[in-house]
Length: 280
Image (tube, rainbow, N blue to C red; front, side):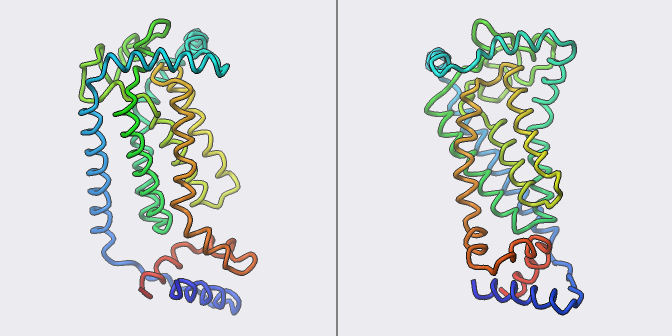
């Protein structure tokens, strides 16, 4: 902590005397990227293994779906089936939703993590563990509350199968994914976290537009009948405290820093990170 505070004070001193800040390239970047990608691959593989092991719960998955539909009606949430039927009336909308569902979720999340690793290493560590923690909690939910998605229930249309764009296949035994892992929705949870990561790590006044990503993702999983409203809401409810917990260090630093210091620090994240690494 003392070393970190010393770096922050030195940065302010340099700004006051208007001296140029020299950023030295960090060594071992390639090895670090390979190591981090390997770690993420291991986490993703463990998650998929857990999904596979918990997949054989068809009976309880359909019972849970019936219960959840009743809970949503009691809460007064709009019917996802009605929303989907209205969306199907718009030409090309279902096709676009299927493509988004299949091609944006994991690639965009991975791309954002790689960008944070390279450009915002201080933010990357928090993002990685927040995302891993959410994924772990989701796995617990999938194992103890298997849930059949709407597309398997009467009243909904499986747009993927209908349009020949399914990532799962025509039956519950198709593919390697656990199709009863609807609660909570990692599509919505990851999208929400990705938006928060990018809002924290960037300084453009347009950065808040990233919140459109989880909103659009939520709409897509409903239109494609892959998730219920409660799936996404529970994912966001789990993500919020994790985002706070894994950003606690930043909160403590800003609490002890001089007034207005957080704005100055955010302008030089790479310098502070590299200087901190040399101090340690």
